[in-house]
Image (cartoon, rainbow, N blue to C red):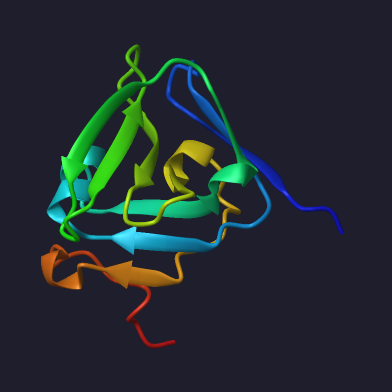
Amino acid sequence: TTSPVRVARCACGQISATCRGEPLLVSLCHCFECQRRTGSTYGIAAFFPAGDVDLSGTATRYARAGDSGHDVVHYFCPQCGSTVYWEPMKKPGIIAVAVGAFADPGFPAPSQSVYRDRRHDWVIDQLSAKP
């Protein structure tokens, strides 16, 4: 079988991240920073080895301190404002890609949910729901 190749893009298509293979991890995050970054109640990231991701387009860089004390460097489109990928400096050699930027309903589901204490009460956490 061949490894999948998936392409994440910003809203205007100027930035893309072409990812080869399956993600190492797909994580749903309820932290306040992800809420602010997405404008939603959570963010979902797919983590890939940097060597499996080809980036194209011109991105604007924004760095913020993470709870770990390590920076998280976000890359977003200066045209449309979409955040497509980021580098969690706590995990060198890893690129996180916004799952929504793939626009693929068949993308693998999250395997973990973090910062659950910051989850909005009305958001159902599928990872903690019983079958």
